[in-house]
Length: 592
Image (cartoon, rainbow, N blue to C red; front, side):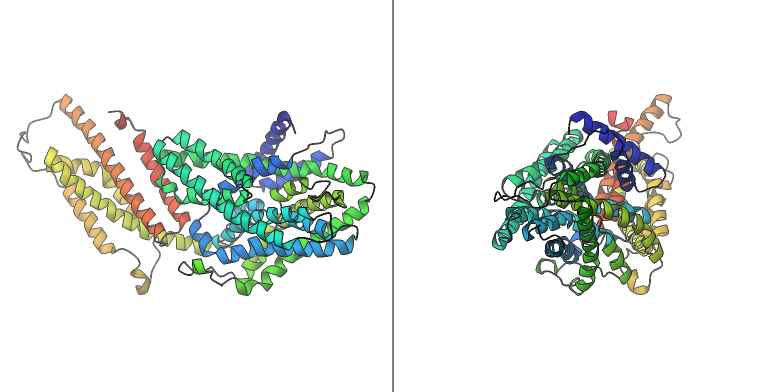
């Protein structure tokens, strides 16, 4: 695929996605549907994509962005069910396809069938996440789907490499497979963490938002390629790096955090649109390959694809319900952490149905070679690729279009979760307000020695009246009605109110005459003195507000680190403070 073709496909896909978002439609599915229709236009040139384009260029930033915005706290709490789906479900799906396909088409060996199973096994959470965010799925489901998608790609691609080694034969070297999988996990995670540590150290030294953002954009590509070079999992390297950088984001500069967020959102839109357009555009030529095959018929290829589709869709709910008893098992490294969230029967049904395939299935299907690693021809290659494409497109359209209706019919919402988040935010806002009052008192005492108590209190009043009132109002409105047992989790409202009132009274009290002993109280200040006083007031007020913001940020991050504040709520609160601090830093007062 040439550069002009890539640009044209991406541009058209983004325009379709933009229209879909404007009319509140599912953007990935809209792009896919339009691309499918376009692919059958007569005389349209074939759109070819090398597997390296998807695996080495498109996949790393998508995975990194997802890991960057994921909650490590929630991921750790759900690690058992995530591994159950991200590893166990992929292996079971691969084996199920590997067993059934040779029964349908005896010319396809077990090794080739397992190769197809590895291709169609990993669900892609892009479409499911888009639906979930729009309809307000609870965080416990979104965490499970997102966490699964972060590790199932590594499982699938590792199984793909192992299956490829014996795809032309009737058997498979399982010892080689176990060794390759272990090496992929260990080397991949190690490479990702080492690169993330190095990148974070460089970014903390430079403290330049533009350079920091560029380093962050390059990191997933370096992690993926380097891990693949040392026989590790590039996918796990990218995920490990993304989790580490995301967890360390509060240590980055305010400008870096505000720079990175829109850039990654734009990259996600570009790559997702391009990928779903590519899936749709290639179906026509996959069908042509089947027609041109001397050993395969189109009708038989459609029948095989239908069987693989049915197995792929059916095996997920069966596996999820059968293994649900294992969901509450706590792994050794997670026994001190929070308990895994329990899923209701409705949650399990949604999770079972959110099995749409996507990016990795497309790339792996393209990567199926004519010959296996042992030199043997892969039997039924055209049918294998066609089946993989039909599973990807079929699940995206069938499950993707019916998932919103199923969610609405089951009445699953995140209303309770939103109330819990508000309660956490109210509690932390009260703690942050208390910290802000301490900063005010300390600063008033410090400034009093230099400019007099009256002037110091005037500056403090100018900087903090609205801020403290806003924090108190927000905490009051967000805080739910609590029982006596829950009351202990909140700061003492009366104590906090008394502290704020005491500071407010001191600030609001008019200064006594001759309070600083240097200026007659009744003398009217000159215009020059008023201008100088106003400038000093603004500069010192901005300085005080910046210190308050940083103190409040410290409280928020500490609560997250202690496990008392959800990471999603933390990021929401930090963004509010970041925008305020950025406004302070870009103010004219910083130029004085």
